[in-house]
Length: 394
Image (tube, rainbow, N blue to C red; front, top):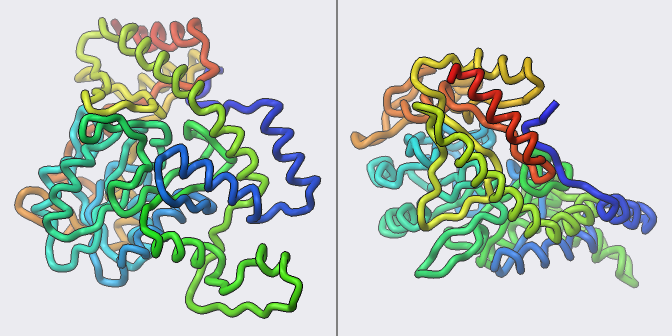
């Protein structure tokens, strides 16, 4: 079986986890602090805060920029449901705008029509590791006084050109960027997340909120030579990362340059091997972006049945996934408030199909994600492309 993704683990990760277990301190502690420092340095951010997942990171980021009950957040429906869910955790309303069909990312020209009095943030997504047009989104948001949060769940190691220089996603251009370490991401800690920011106040809030808003962290109490009684100053959450996860993450971060190099080689090879399939849509990397190729997404030729193609691939021993989901089509959003927006501005969303979000819906219905992982051999990739040829009927 050729899987859709596969974490790259070795003896170093085993030794790192064993070292923490042997130390007796396995919860949030010195390994987390070291991972945060190394991650901030990698991204070029002043601060990095480790948490239990990217979903919890998004929740804290939105809370930090002031999103609360009754507010609206502009985002895309075409993303894993955690993006939209994080807005609803704040008891706010998602305002969905459509995507560009080539990059699968938010259309910057639809941001401004969606902004109105209740808008508290823009939550953009670097979908499947492909950087969104952050400069254009920030241009609109700053003119209108709206903070930008980056859902960079898939984008560790991706790069964007800024003022003529390449920089990594996670160097804060917006207010906060949020990353995932789920096993399907480029590097993994089993699960976990990270926030990066240059805002000292946000950093302090994240560290407070992730640990129940405890006034004195347990690491400080552990080192104290006097008895300390902590207090709980406001509503907080149990969003901590363990030291076991962080130790693994530090090893994974060291592997990242090699992982990125191999993923980019495989993506280039896919583009070459699939170029001769008539009507097959291939992902577009803008000249100002460098993807980490967390996923390789193709758009099937007109008339192809998505489920049938995926089943033929599965029958041949190759795992695939359908195009990225659209949150507004899920039953959970039949029961919750959401709006959609096009050039006419925000309108009430209530149906499972929405003309204003048609590119996202088409991507979900007609795209397929192909296997891509750093251990993938050329002969395995040849098998994937040959099987896709046969499944499509070319």
